[in-house]
Structures are given as structure tokens and as C-alpha cells.
Length: 185
Image (cartoon, rainbow, N blue to C red):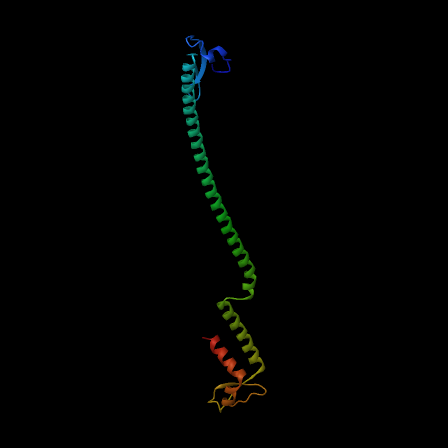
């Protein structure tokens, strides 16, 4: 007998094989509901009933296992997707950190760049400096006309010779002539 009912010892010995008793047996036919039916209680029929009940339960358990496996697979797919998203997020954070570091480096080097002018700014600055030095030089020099220098203008300061060859060899005059040439190009 099933479902916790006590068995009669006489039934086990085979004395009452011809006796057909009906007892309610609960057999789940679907995963969501069960059906109660009456089954004969002879040992042969009980064995058959147990096998049938076990087969039904095995099918239901297999269906449950299949459902759980589908849920596990779905969860694994979601976890895989989440891991991919986390990986992308980490990559984006690393890229943002690199950009932030570059911006910090550029901002820090911007102070250095202020000290280091661009080529155009350096040229403008050099032209202004040359112009200032040229004006200072004119203030300290006398403007004379030298007959030895083909009647060209020459600057004369203390220590300068009005001779063209000596003036040309003087490094200071060479620098000023080059600077003036560059300045007024």
C-alpha cells in the first residue's frame, strides 16, 4: 500500500492475493496538479502501480530539470552579457582615465608652453627685441657719412672704425646687419 498506510503482514505472505482492496493513491499527472484515483492493492498490481507512478514522477522531474536547465542557461547568457558590459565599462573608464591624464599633462605642460613660445611668437618676440636694440644702438651712435665707404651711411661709436672693412669684421656690426636684414624682410 502507498502513502503511509500500514501493510497487513498477511498480505505480504501471499495469503490474501485474491483479495482486491481499493485504496486511494495520489499520482501527479501534471507538474501543476495531481489526480487521485483508486488502485487495486494486490502485490502484483501494487508493484505495477508503483512503477507507473515512478515513471510519471520521473517524467515530471525530467520536465522540471529541463525547465531549470533552461533557466540556468538563460541566467548564464545574462551573466555573460553582464560580464561583457562590465568589460566595456572598464575599458571606457581606462580610456577616460587616459584622457584625463593627457588633459592634466597638457594643462601642466601648458604652463611650460607659456614659457616656450611657438615659432611665430618667438619670431615676433625676436623682431621686437632686435628693433629695441637697433633703436638703442642708434641712440648711442652718431650717424655719419663715410667717404671711404662709398658714401654710405655708417655708424660710429667709440671703438668702431669708420673704415668699411673694419666695420664689417666687427661682430657686433655683423649681428646688427643680419638682424636688420631679417627684421625688414
